[in-house]
Image (cartoon, rainbow, N blue to C red):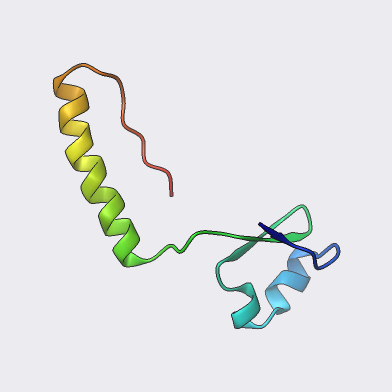
Length: 68
């Protein structure tokens, strides 16, 4: 979900307080909330990819791709 802040530049974004910039990225001048990129989530994602890859590859079912 985008947060309406007007048209921000990368310099504006870099000057934001940590609390406001955290878990956001700048897209077309707007702050966009991103999902939490935490160690726990990354570990779970990798665990599931490893398990799914074995099943999919073994059954020749296609490909498994992880997204950050």
